[in-house]
Image: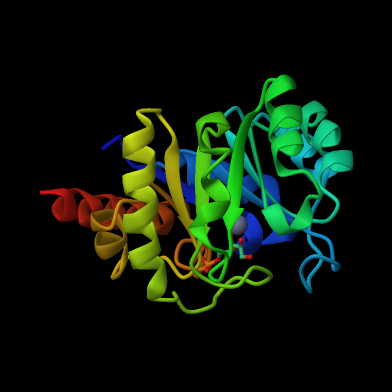
Length: 228
Ligand code: DX5
Ligand code: ZN
């Protein structure tokens, strides 16, 4: 199993101080910045777009930016995120008319590509596209909001997708998103995840670099213990 990537979701950051929040969470040991894009169409919420991604790059953020598109259609916005400095771009198959084409588009632009499965999306959607992916993102909540409870069936799904990835022999990351906390991240790691999104568990009061570092260190310790 590959290393442990912690990707704080800035959905729960203080948007009025976003640059400072991102600086602090990266200085606290985060690996990636998870960037949730919602369009009030594919999901019932509206968040941030390419201009904010570009603003973080201009601010000096050099860490990978992990763009999670919850938008439909997908293809039109991909180029904007590439230009804005995205590192990885993931999308939901239900939101794209041509899943394989969207993956090709993302990869041809030089970004890594991910496919996102909602809690009720069958894993079969991976069958003919998995070798083309850099990342599979399993949702453990229904997309649209931070702070929701982890849906336990995601653990079984992680085990199934972990087997598929291992059988592929490719270095595809397995990311989990939604309701990840210090007290369940061990079970999530044991089920096969290697990349962990956490929003409300990390970005909470007192919103200091030290508090973020403490949470991230505790999460890494739980992952290490679960892996033995
Ligand atoms: C939900 C988003 C998540 C969300 C996670 O649609 O994709 O990234 O911010 O938030 P928590 O960790 O609070 O469940
Ligand atoms: Zn997300």
